Length: 187
Image (cartoon, rainbow, N blue to C red; front, side, top):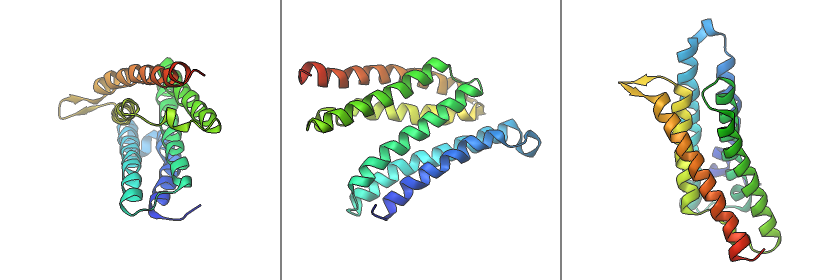
């Protein structure tokens, strides 16, 4: 494993997952519910920003590696899955939303691994639709974690709308990847 700044940021993102979840287990008299919500939203946002930053730095500093290419999407999936499970537990997201998003990530990861073994890994490379889906998730989740008003802006409502858009994009992007493999590749 190459030790470089992009990989350190990716590991940091993984290490932030227990902090994001752990906030909700702090005693209520210590920070209160809105304090928990704010801390979780800020931690998730910081972690999401390291996702962008580690990729930027890896390219900019010419520090890309096979290990980094493997670990980065794993960190993203762990972070999103943990946050969605927490949001289900605290009643802010319907379980079917979490099942669809997490299930798609598992299915597409397995599909990518299978296609790589067949020497056709590029047929399920990340595409623009997947990036848009990820953007909606990464914006919706902290809004749902925050669950309050920001200068008259209803974060919970906006996050709810965005998570359902993310679910739709999740299903469409999964169909796209499956079409790439099944129809276009004839597998």
